[in-house]
Image 1 (cartoon, rainbow, N blue to C red):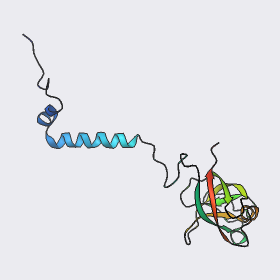
Image 2 (tube, helix red, strand yellow):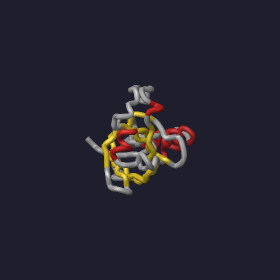
Image 3 (cartoon, helix red, strand yellow):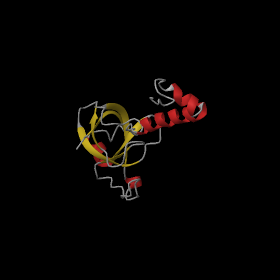
Image 4 (cartoon, rainbow, N blue to C red):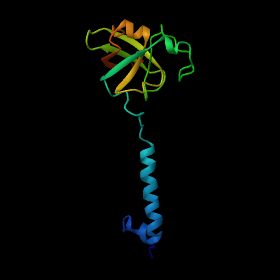
Length: 147
């Protein structure tokens, strides 16, 4: 005599009858949530997959000199640093001024800008290096430096 389990040959439908629909629904929901948890979620709009992004940038300088930034370091207007709302602190970017082609490497150390449609704030030294101090705001291309 051969004994067969109750669920043998019935596919997944045995789960709904054996455990109950609510418990099975919860189990499927938890399985879906667990599979989503395994997906690497990048912060906001940045991931190593994007090559470049054209944004508006401004600069900030001596009015914030030596104040603490979001990273905890004091802001040095003569350092090659920048601020972005969502990029992780410590992210390195190549910023190129689209009007003259000059570029600079900056490290994100602060949060901002919080005005207008600008997405990037550069230190005075970085803005000077790409020739945007007089204009104040410029269209730039920012590219992640993966190291």
